[in-house]
Image: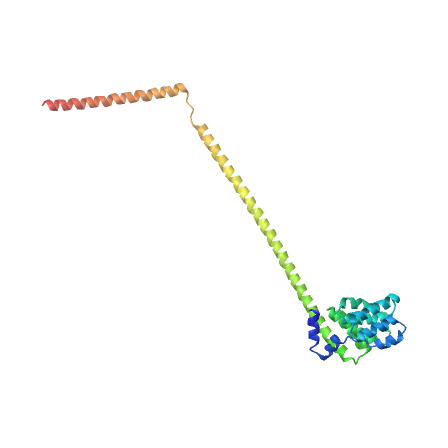
Length: 265
């Protein structure tokens, strides 16, 4: 949720309007009195009251250059940075005065403002903790109560979303593992198919070798005859054909002679 959305949500409730638009660090005037000798702090307080938050921040920073331990300068600088929308910068400044603030008369306000900064940063756990501390110091602060309820609700939503995201991640991891297993099974099947193809190729080659061996064996099994025997067989065949041809010629001659006799009649 953006800062603008958070502020819009807060403005639905009277207490949140006060938190969003009046980030009041109660005690600024008292701190001013205590640090009256700090000219930069006094000038910063005047600029702050006039709404010149950027100029006020510059004055507080000048005061810190003179005295880095100035509680008033740090406390009010965080105030100005918050009003400027510089929440990331306001947070460490507030944290730097945590110890003295907690034992001061402004402890409740310190924790309240710390909670406000955490809300703007969407650090819901820190916001809940800060508002709780503020209520412990001042149980009657209605704004702190309302903000505490709001921050706690947002924290619960965040935790629920985190659990959902974690569950989704686990489901995705399980799906990824299943996909990996499927890929491995597919690779195993592909290897098996490749092995089967290789075995089939080997069988085909073996069959071809067997056929070639059979052809060679058939050729080897055929009887081998000498050239002289072959010539004798050829002569015998030719003699047989001549004998047959002579017989046919005699028969033809007999038929012609018979016809001639018939013709002479």
